[in-house]
Length: 490
Ligand code: BES
Ligand code: ZN
Ligand code: ZN
Image (tube, rainbow, N blue to C red; front, top):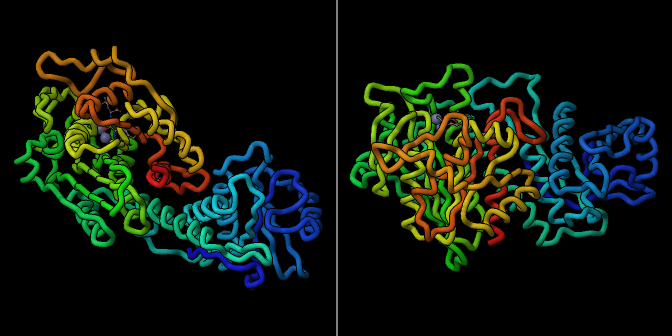
């Protein structure tokens, strides 16, 4: 779907859309006089601008239509409501087979015009996303509008700031869709090497360099966490290192993403029900690639390293076994008591590698624990870490971006849970006791104490069976929007 700014009088389509606050006297982007007749008819239909509701009106002897989406009460406003409302407009427009949609813009929102534009573009593009790679399109398949025209009130020209807001919002939404595509891809079509190839293509444009540490290199470097997790598969594991270095970088950030292209659990095999969802166990790595796609499209004044440890966790003849001991890249030995706690093993190597790059801050993203879904549910990610400013920023920006984070503590005393009798550390704690925290504590053992670090457990929201708001079923692209907003804010 194309999205562009145009002056209102240039919009020639017959299908317009507007947003409104509950019980407001006018529609956003229209004067009171212009709104009056519409609002009158809408009220007769029982529509007053309630959040998550839409109302379709015909005018011009039925030749034109106006679709209104409610933002709810003004004092309950959150920027994400614009995203949700825009998404509802797109879904309704899809059902009505609208090809060109003109959305009225207005200054009168708390987020201001650039914020309005950003959120509307996000909501529209993300709701218009469909994963249709592997099936034939049918006639009755919903097809989003071809064009979304963002119409400015009469007399107001599109400023540079607004044009930039549209372009950036589009780039961010495209990055989210790219991440979704990777997560939705069938597991056998996204082997570690295949993802490394995609990362290499991404790096070709923009100021991005890429290095892939293939299996032989991992062996040379002693990255046994990644190697042992990948040992049960015919697909060799690897580590992707992307690097974006603009001329005047203010900060250096290292992003790390868990890239298990399929998590069967290994010899500690998972139950077969729902195992298919474990194609999403590379959502952290997919988010790293999504962010680098964005870095290829827009200029950001931050140096960014992106690390994606990639492996397929299968129970093959050479798979690691419960009871095995491995020496991780940092030199620490790990007793592997459950091969399904594999994410922390590949991240251990990547975090130690990232620490050596001496970034100002390191952030890892991982579908790490089922316990996290129990703790904070399927729409929240859990945050842990040692960088207070980063944690606060991610929570605050996440709210604006419609990605929800809740901090959990790295409880020192629980370090006793991962003490091993035979190695420096073991890869699981007590059963059903603070699983997400213990996983976080395990990771912390491999992060240099000098490097401020945040761990994001995205096990809940990275993948959804049914979809919500503007998340379609499948990969959601969490937490790409928040990371993008954070990098921009540094
Ligand atoms: N990839 C899973 C975690 C997961 C579960 C993500 C559900 C998304 C949805 C991870 O590798 C795993 O299996 N973790 C185990 C750890 C346990 C063995 C200590 C878990 O959560 O059960
Ligand atoms: Zn697992
Ligand atoms: Zn996993």
